[in-house]
Image (cartoon, rainbow, N blue to C red; front, side):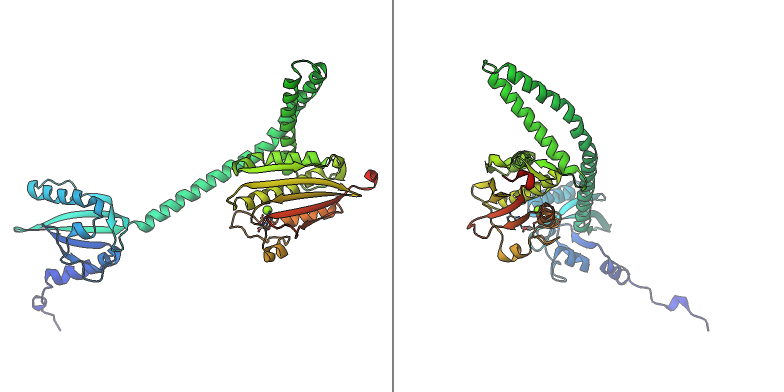
Length: 376
Ligand SMILES: Nc1ncnc2c1ncn2[C@@H]1O[C@H](COP(=O)(O)OP(=O)(O)O)[C@@H](O)[C@H]1O
Ligand SMILES: [Mg+2]
């Protein structure tokens, strides 16, 4: 059977092109010379947030162009109508568009002028860039994060060495300052050399605390001056505490200068407690205080770390020492600070509790035995 091709009816241009325009994933908006929309495909309705078909008959400038660009849009249309000069037409542009909900969003747009006889229209092909921009921003954020992490791990790898390097010159400064302190005792320069000595001691404590934080977990027991250790921990966190406007007060019992223990492990535990207090205090609006106290009691030393932050609710308090229990946002704390601290204090024959009696804030109480050699 043969088919007579010439008898098949030709599709009209509209019948052919109309469904193609309607199927487009990008918005297609056609306007007449006055800027009135004469055709908009379903993607245009969806992208600009208008009811299906409702864009027809509306002015382009007053609907999909954001208010702050409308005057420029109208001027551009008038200029083109008067001179035929093509500034925008035929070029691919990235612009802001206006959503029916009253917000602007980024689009990529190409406008074509289509002339047939003495009829002219503008056809705009518009692509919503919101998702692409969000993805680009996310990629940029991730890249910045990786960059920061790389820097941090490089810094971490080097800082341990730097701290060790600082130890030697620092001990020279401290040793010479001590000699000069003796030589200059009673003279006009005594105050100056005392200040120098104190500053050098402070540097040395910060370096020691840093090295203690960086050290591996193998226990190394000795005699620990707890007051000195706590001063070091506060100085180590000093910048953090100052930038959070936390006033630190201390009340140290001079009798706790020699407690048997692992200096570095104890530093790690106490720094964790101080950072917890700082994080809690950041949630407080009024004056922020952190109070550290040591007390010698019989065969025990009692250390209190009290902040006037929001404190712990009963349900948090009940679970605070559980490993991985945290109330913090992802990435802000792994929930092991208190669990590790408890492990360290218990391995010293002591313990850690949360003081129930305080009415505001949170007070952590640590008990450590002074050991047989120290009993008096
Ligand atoms: N000083 C404090 N004030 C109020 N809540 C605290 C304090 N210290 C600890 N907490 C609570 O105990 C939880 C567990 O603390 P921690 O074991 O150090 O883990 P992390 O600090 O990683 O959350 C914290 O998430 C917080 O809710
Ligand atoms: Mg913590």
